[in-house]
Length: 402
Image (cartoon, rainbow, N blue to C red):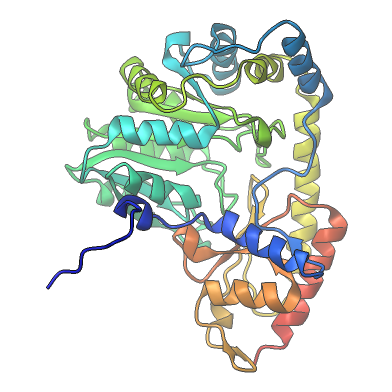
């Protein structure tokens, strides 16, 4: 006999997982509210303020009356600036009608999934992946197909793995580079090999999330959309949160084939319409003005990465590689599975992170949320003092395990 749910909440939302990064951040706030000294390294948010020249541009836009509704795909001035940026930095050619500006890159991905996917369509996702990818695909009726690469491969999926995952139900391949949560960066030759594989499957598109583009420690960023095999089937997603420390401004965008851009704008028109006017004016300045603050942030992130890696490598049993971008490390904790502290047993990455939160008062995010059981993500978008203190606490806590 089937049981009918009496909940007024839709099955779609009931089945949706809560964002693990936001959940851990909330737990950290609750512990802090109880008087505990908690160091939160769970959120992917630069700890720098938005550069002054961008803030000044927003103030000027307010004074000039940019307080009204905007076109759904964005102000023409911003879409033109995005085209300039794509050509200048990525070698990608777009026209303004191929650009859609959204309330963050997360909404850009939401638009894409709802514009692309019918019930049962498959999306090949490189794993470890950003926590939202899988949920946003499922919410649109799609089926996430994870393709995993572990620490021994620097978390980078191969062209052969992609080829094996594609079926006649595959709509698109989704990945980020530099990658959240691993910091891995796909080099030009690796992307070309993947592009050539996808190119053989004429029904398959590529969605490339490049929001960490400017936090790249290995040289010039490479975009998969530059390769002829997939040039006409690539949607490039980007935004202002990471490279310009504009997380709270909520601005993302895509460059896409015209029919895809129109479909995304159509969907967005029924959800949020255009994003706010004065933030878009400030975004023009961010793209076209002095990039020195962005490069200075990258330099500081690299310094912190090297410091964090040195400290983590002093912890027995922890395995770390060398992330090439973004501001995360993604250690392998397989050596700690089955270990105990009192009546606590570390059976999985959630257990590990909860133990570290309660015992060391450091907030991390479990790897299982990124499609990678047996790992955790640590953000080093924090001060040197916080990072040193956090890792020292983790080291002490792990020594207590038997």
